Length: 454
Image (tube, rainbow, N blue to C red; front, side, top):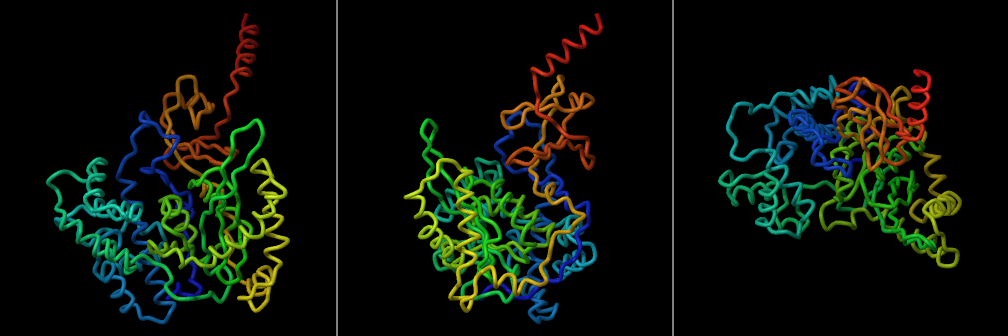
């Protein structure tokens, strides 16, 4: 069946959580180097466990909204793996009440029910195995194990192939289950439609046209798009130069700013959609993040249909009126989206247009908390050591930090699209903002100071 159409009861998230502390710790990032300072693993593991518990809480919440009792919901949750492990109903009940009373922050401190007991296989290794299987469903188990050994996730003599195969089977990710579509990964298997806007958004990425500008290198483009299941309205879509996490987060942030916060977000298993940063953003905004089963692209039929319409109607016009830059492409695309696609009657909407359906039924949309710094929630994070000249490097650009931070390790929070906001943090304290280093200006200032001193 499709995702539950009930409107989830939203609970406030504590202000200190939305900052998404250490969002990217443990996540490879193109700005990180081999010389970047090490990140303590304790907070990384705590946050990963909290996200697993949050997923279980979401299942309980949806079951209660559909009329199930708490007991049956807990029994159902205990019958499927969470982070590669099965948990007793009593343990999951502890998570449920902790989240109910204190929100997402409480899930980061819940004690394990099996603390102090020996486990046959490290849960972290099981989780890494499952994630690697999701990324590469066609690889054999031996190939996956070889990669986990290379990453030092597994050590020789600490596992058996039968145990690893059993973990994949329990998660519904053995090769036979993947081919038959019998895995435990969420996603609709029958036709469905949400009764109200913003109950479910679907997200996907499509390869766009290659832009050819004389005198410049050809530019490949990728379209990240979101579509509302109930109205077929596109909350936001934009062409980007790469298929990367930061661009999808930019697309999602603009969609939430203009159209409100969805209850559920349904995506495929691409790297940008399975990132921990996205999980934390969704957890802090109380958005249930769902993923399609491998080999089940048809379960995202509505957004696939949107892409087909876009290719036939919008991209076809570029043959006769080509564009040369990404900015020109997006301007033309947004004009087509608002003036044609959103205003054209849709057969599945009883001949209403997506704009009409969204406006008619979208009377009680959930909007972001006005007191919340939404931009900061979506900012990326990396660690840097400030040099003795009070500078640090970020994506091949030199930035200036306050002089008193020389020699200190700081966490840099930044907008990865235009870098209009680059902040320096140490633990929970905002230390200030960084500015681009202007060596010529510094040279003039230094010369002026010397003249004044002499």
